[in-house]
Image 1 (spheres, each protein chain N blue to C red):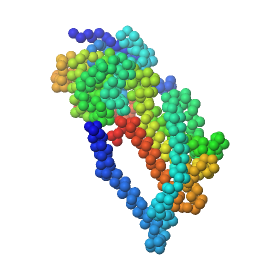
Image 2: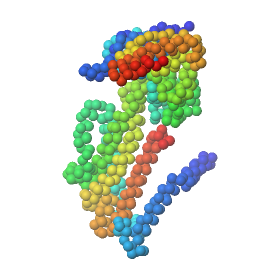
Image 3: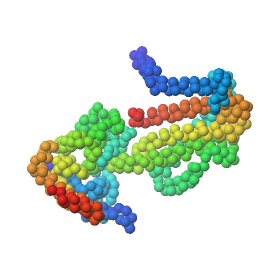
Image 4: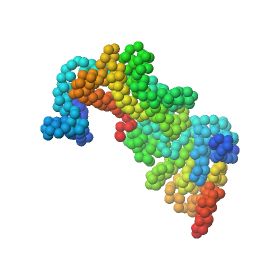
Length: 280
Length: 278
């Protein structure tokens, strides 16, 4: 009991903090105002007999929510969430696992940089979507080709950020550590790695955004249906082909929510891994 | 009597930077003795190559010719025996004050955990940062950062502490407090110190011997023994002896600083207007 009390107090205060947080309410109000404007714009024709440009052609949020309720009962919709998330996660994880060491190796070793940087820079401007045909040939399944272009989307951004971050570490940290007796390995592990961490998280946040963009386009283009199956991109494309515009909007907002959850996770991870940056 | 034999010897050191066709001599014919348990202050006109001298002493750079000897052996690279406290703070931003202070001993693993903790706590107390030991550098004020950096160097018990304009960039008040603090620290426990600064008064009040460097390519212009009594305080700067040291060193520094103005038209204009001043 004695231990339980401070715990409940803490969780209470956390919710209390959120409720009394002005920034939180500002965000809530902003979203509500946005929805209200959208509703008014979309209903304008019915109410006043004149069609608002752009927004007048879109279903109002009340309709979208109604459709969403319906769609939310179909397992296919949640399967799409799951499939897209897995593709993003696998591609992104592979990009981190390969990209971080690759970027660090280029940062610390001039021979490695000399050999790998030029080809890397030539490959980097090629948009991931241009890789779709090649990746379909490369990989045995559509699923793997989609994951591959997802990987490419995040990879270049992560590498560039890691390389730039590691190379901009102040030489004084290295010198200070050296004169206290640091070996080459110590310099890498205790200075370069923590010093690059902020850039790694910047790269991860940007890369995650690109991953979502790419996975959807990949699903649309590879017609994700037969082998790869579903995914939110295919959900949108399928709804569009079926002429169900309301459902397209449901798909679009789903992606927005998925992207927001992903970047929140990365921010939270950055918060945990970099306590010295918490005061910002 | 504390021992004041020679600990480091700089012999005929020459150092230049750049490619062959535009090689610039920075240090030429530099001879210098660093004595044990003394504070050797080094002053020189700005841009004369003070930082290069620091890098040479620390072992970050090696001389093109000549030698830097320490206890009979040649200096061949950085070592914890010659620790540098840098111009701007070089505390690792991702470590707390305590972690920064224990960085060196932990790295080398040459102190048992128990005595390391005791030593770290004692040194953090000495620099007055006990309440800030779990704070990150960015949460400390400028003066606290310098003290934390001092603590990080002191715990390694280096044979020589090399201070490269350690109080630069602090506001006047904090700088004065740091000077007083450092003076007390040096007088409580004898250490071998090389203190590089561009502030003449700071050099005079801290130093046992004051080395005045010439303009680029830099060499020793004169070594002045500062015989102000110890313990010292900043008020002594207004004593006649201190004034004499200051005037003498100032004249040399002016001469050297003006050399970098000669040779150009605007430079000679400057010299002329300078000479007309009463």
